[in-house]
Length: 316
Image (cartoon, rainbow, N blue to C red):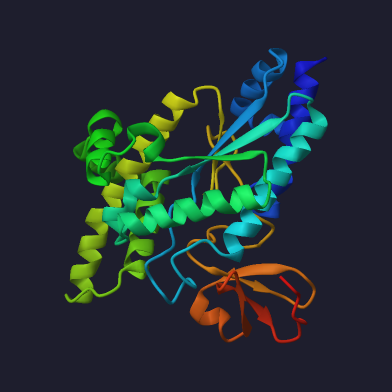
């Protein structure tokens, strides 16, 4: 077997689902634009080893009730999990050893920074695992801090991760200031996280400017923990292909992947809810906006998604 040909075919199967901010003016991306992933795949194929993919994400639901339908996974997560399982199955059609994707749930890393309780994170993660098991999504597994530090209190787990893996705050601030001159990736990430934190904060009793300052501070904490989580994942899954829920440029060490075929490049099931259209397609919207587009559908006794009024009810 030619490892280059097979690795190229595997990477080509992922390209249609790539999450990117590129426009058509950038030209069509090819496997050659992703040499980092191509070399990883070639090494795995040459050794006839299964492909392992890691995806940080699926942390918990946003604490903002205007964005989501509740605290537990719903139709958004269900569609995303099925989509990711199908991607792995497609790789298995191209490469006999197959592929497995590890969802690296990072809610406990950020719960104290985003205003979500650790019990809510546990409930979300447990429901996510049950969803994978019930649907028979055999290509998917999960990984979170409980798999690393066992029954330690969540705050102690975060302390352990910070001490071992997180970059120094001063160096991160300097990096962001340096990026400001060239409007670099770190600065864009910092601004994006600050905006998300501002939108998701509920019950803040201070002024708008005070909230903005607090969110800027917390944004640095989120970036530190995100990098720490990436380093920890690399330690535990050293040969994995690293996927990302965020748009990634060509040639990056992470490969941005859409969670299902919805158009928005940034929105996720844990910051929004699903709206099913009459033609069968779906989109992610803030729950408050989705409520204006149709009727609320329940599944397993809790809110699942919205359906356009023109959609006929489907037995669940």
